[in-house]
Image (cartoon, rainbow, N blue to C red; front, side, top):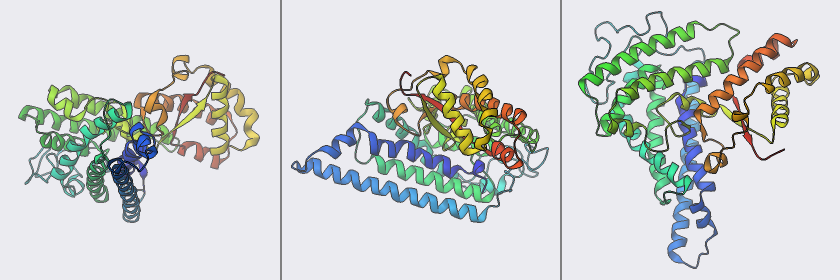
Length: 397
């Protein structure tokens, strides 16, 4: 299975980032865990909380089962829908770009080579769940920051809607329409806003149709520009930026109520919370690297390179490259110290920070590729390394 084209991993990480973070580290839950059982009401609340956590675990197991099923049914080299020819964004003969479909469950927009995958999705069901999920993610942000109180039913509400989204995403993926495909994105926006009670106007629908067409073509050009030497991390950065551009164009045409439906307070720009940006593609593709100063950061990167890609005997060649590269990392970026739940969670991170980390990292990869005598296996491992290393300062050295 090509994980780059598989949404269940990404949306599943939202549960890991939000629900499991709150279950394990939220102040309200800590208080629940530490309370005595002498108060029957509090004891009942604790038991209910534990039951809901058990439901979360069951949902995560079901996600893993569905991942395995898609892996069995989808060949790894299967192309993304809509990108199999140079005219990927052209209208499908007989329907036309943006053709209105037969029912609420049908996609609003159909582009060349996307109909089968998009038709496999129940769009009204998906839109209902995504519209309901966004305010819950805003609540999660508030709970994590202490501005909102945890309620016992919160876990169940999250898992209900995330589970429904994953189900529909897997149906589309198995039929050839990945979540990150622009055709999927514009239909998701349309269905979400309709179910949130702030539907697009006719003019906005036309504009969204044009956005889909434009970004399908841009995505095809992006992929056509790669060769066998292109780093997987570069592909991910490019895809994230392309989808950020798509959603910027979407946001620019929305009114305030529509914008609030897609981007409630605290959600926008955070990996693990923001569904309507390229940042969802960083879920499970970044890793925090702790350091106390620039020297320990460079040493941590060296350890990653030796453990993931290079022979230990190449350390002498690697050290001056890392030193030169590390000296160019801006102080403001390296020394930034996330606070509160963003720091405590393993999955929540400002999306721009992850993208910046990946860009810095690609520059290092290029230097290593060009200046170190790598074996074919090492060159391949370097190309395939697809995780951004994000610095986390833990104190002064």
